[in-house]
Length: 282
Length: 280
Ligand SMILES: Nc1ncnc2c1ncn2[C@@H]1O[C@H](COP(=O)(O)OP(=O)(O)OP(=O)(O)O)[C@@H](O)[C@H]1O
Ligand SMILES: [Mg+2]
Image 1 (cartoon, each protein chain N blue to C red):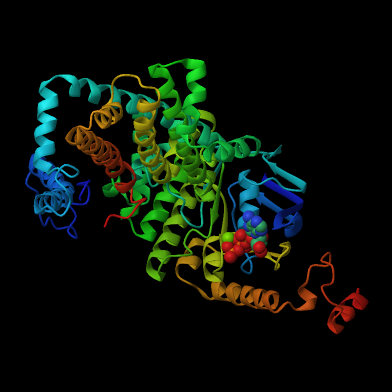
Image 2: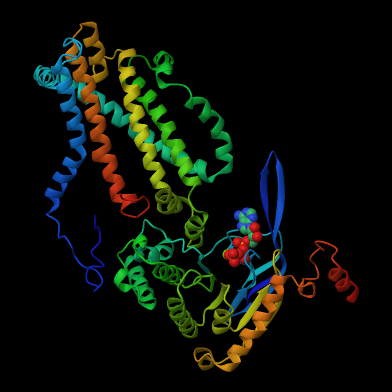
């Protein structure tokens, strides 16, 4: 069953350049994506291609220009507790203790205090931070902060979890352990997750489907289903490596801006010879 | 300063000083905050005693202190202090309240910002003192005149700082609040206000210091009959130099206490504890 449906999504930012001069930056153009219920989808693509933008649009924070954006068949127009967001830069509330950060969404729901406490306790345990419940976030390390971010986003039990490079700023060990934790959490809860990353290995390890975006304006270049069992993932098996290699190649071509990889709808930036060739081939 | 014990039981955290209790800590803090001032007073005493400046123009601190005790015993000083404090606290408090509310709105609503900014800049450049004669026309020689004028000017200062504070909150912080279902009043109270608090507290500081400045001029212009400012100017008419100094000294002391005891404590308890401002 389709959880999130994105069709022909366009999103641009208006930039005020001063003296009334304004320009429009196209961050996403003609993005198509379908995420099924309970699916773990990873979006990968070069820096600045519009991944965070896409997530913020789905979160309902940024309005989009045109296209279709449906969650459970209903159009998305504003933020809601049916979507949980983990931010690239954590965005924890520094004026609340770790526990109160996790409780925040619940208290906004008007949930009774004891229940808030019980649920926050559960999620703090899940991310292994129960001993730090009463600490203010500035005393935590980056990895710990991000775990609070994850607990906070999950506590409200959203239908879909949107994660923007949650492990991007962590060291390899913490990253690895959090990836495994997240995979376990996902297997347990069967949450729908849209996960953004720069790391091919992370994408292959975690997800059932990897979506590769083009350089800005972002659009889907390719969607690759990852058919690996849990054991194959955690043991870093041969098939996993195979997927990795394939994706690496794909992304490399994206970065090099190989004309044959360019989305067809993108207007030609310059009439380079290979661009013409590409068009003639069509 | 350690505010939480949650980390103490883990192996990595070692207690290096159990502290000497609350009262010793308060005493030390009080000492830390007063010794530079005391040094200044000692310097004053030395200069005054040396006779570099004519003693009629520059009495010693001890003389001024004696004067303070004397006029206190005469009964007028207490009334002056109370009325000045009431005016500053009342005017300042109203200013903080209104300035904060409008600042938060101005920092989140484009329309409100566009409407408020031009008049804000217009009024910001007019000294409160200059408006006293006009306000007196409407409100007469009353407490209200002083409190309104003082509150207005302090309020503008709070407003500017709150507005700028809100505008410099990292967007993701606000998005996180909205994504977690905060909107309307809870959003303002639990996300926007604390996120902008470092700058808002600066606004309160500047607001209160402005309030003191206008107060003194106001008490003279309105000639309301009480207040430290009024006392200073009255003393000038009678050439009671020591009383003039006493008034000035007391204003400084109360301003200092308000800042160090109230505002600074608030700051330590909030934004410093939360790591939003650095502790040196
Ligand atoms: N607030 C904004 N105003 C104007 N342009 C923006 C804004 N945010 C993003 N952009 C532009 O949109 C494009 C996409 O930005 P986005 O943050 O979504 O990239 P990203 O894929 O998340 O990059 P990264 O992997 O580095 O996080 C960028 O090229 C940037 O120039
Ligand atoms: Mg990003």
